Length: 282
Image (cartoon, rainbow, N blue to C red; front, top):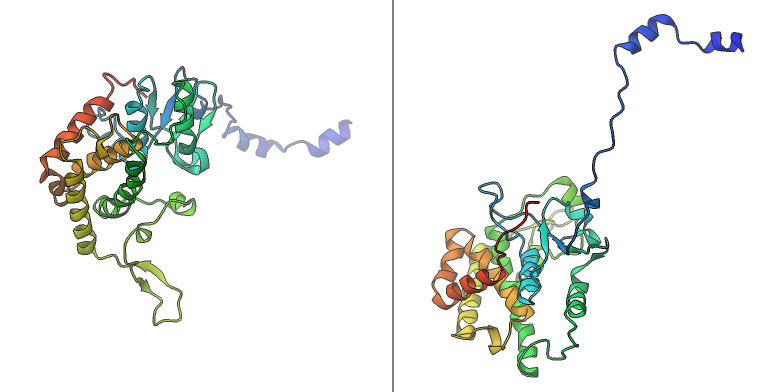
């Protein structure tokens, strides 16, 4: 054994060299995703003004904001939000995601069913609308918001793309998929290279956005909720998310909403309903 030990012993010069770089062992870092919670917590994209005053509560992402408003308008106010979770950690690699106190994670598809369960609500075939015609009409307004309005906001508020976000791009729609007619590629038409990139003209998109805002104003009128519903619906949550985001956008986008006092007043009233008195620190 002694001869074996001597054969594999570290030479003294190397031992002294290694001593210059001592090995230190540190405790494992805390996993933010395993944080214990006491109430349902919605994982969202960070607020738009976080870097300015830290007081903004609404997510900069329309989809996340829609579900914040949805929960509040459903009367579920005892929930937290957090924006220190990477998007890749959400269900399906996307936010928002609802985390329950038992650790279970829910995608947005399962949030309405969860809300029905905790509120002991029965399944409503009309989805909260006053009649079947209004329910069917709501589909057209959803399409308008997620098409014409969403396209304008995407151009006005471009997102910063990192290498990780590009590599992990999931099923979310690209801007060119909601622009009609579809834009032509920047290259690949008369070259041997495959098509890449898109050239999206801003004026037609803005014109469709202006008409959409006008239509929304005309349809809302003086009603308390869109389509004359007696209580807020998922469509109202979606409308609020888009109006709030538009009013936080550059002047050319914001002014189109400000031309319609009923939309501005409606957004202000709904914002007061979905804003909690005080948000706990993340």
